[in-house]
Length: 538
Image (tube, rainbow, N blue to C red; front, side, top):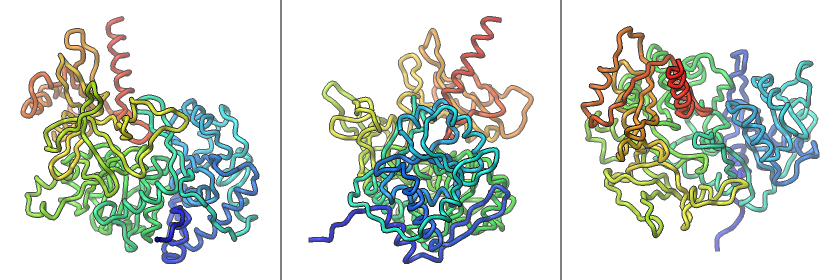
């Protein structure tokens, strides 16, 4: 006997306009100046944009609209206008190759692509490989002519009535980063993203409030910027969008008063020295939401102890819209030592409201559920109202989904009695040496505790005797001329058996990254195998 009407993104937009109209969106422009306007002005432009897209006369309900853009106010406008006219927003990952993106654009059948000025030259390489009816540039020039975004808006009406009759209509299409093979598409619905927004805005998750100033450094093409554009506006928080190339994160925090920021650990490791020198300037910053990879406990300690900034691990997947777990201390943890608190914070956290986790092991009869005791290791499987049940244009397979409807994440994990999950490794990344499993994640976490280590990636390489052996690829915190392999090996020997110790410690200037900022172990493996082949040939 309750009212029943669709849960759509239009409700988030209209709530922001009615209740939080004076809150602001600030964007760092390429010339390092700021563009700023309030939610009321944003919503008016979103309605103009909705009319403008319809007037292009190439978009029907359900059609895909691509974006090749950074974190800007124009991209944010597209985040709302495209889904609210019944089309599907498709943010393209600007860090993928033109060949990869051409395949993705072809599969998605994007009818219109909106292009950010910062990536115009880069987009030209892609444009040669795709067929698309319309290209809209945020700005145009004689060198890159086309439809101009601002001109489209200026000629459009600001009156538009949102009408999405079915909450299960698709609103967004994101592709995985391809770390485990070719990128796969995940189609989100209005309902799934609305429910995800409600869940992440819980106090024990993102915990955003009207008093916050939220700065997503995570790219908007990375799983919808972890849902922050929707969560922030629903909560009424101000937003700071850093554009394509923020020169100085400390300046950006200081000038905008950012209170919550989100990004991968590599960003926070890189900017920590800068932030630590300017503690007074960044005093508004209270929380970092960290995802993509595990943040080293030493870095968590540095931020919390030296800067007073709370670190909150989030874990999820593109397939989960993307948030699955969030790591915050419980009330029962308040009397623990700082070291114990940081140990818990280094875990990926507990399932957020609405998400179910299970640890399982595969048997001849299917899957057997494993206990949560912090010791038993198993395959991590998930389900929730915002988790995909299949991939876009791909029939479900038992490799990715169980017969009883759970997503097989590909992660190997433990879960303790309090529900805190910790990733042990990717199922395909476990190193099998002499029939025993070696966790690359555990080795990496230990090496990051050593003061000489800045970044590390542990990979398995083929070995005639043992099948596979681990190699650690390391970047150093400062230049050291002597070989420190023995030192690092002795450091690991305190925690791990002898057969876990990597056969080599390869020192490099930089570890290659994937399109979403994770260590690119596939690229590393290829580089090492090529180097080994060259040595044998010589």
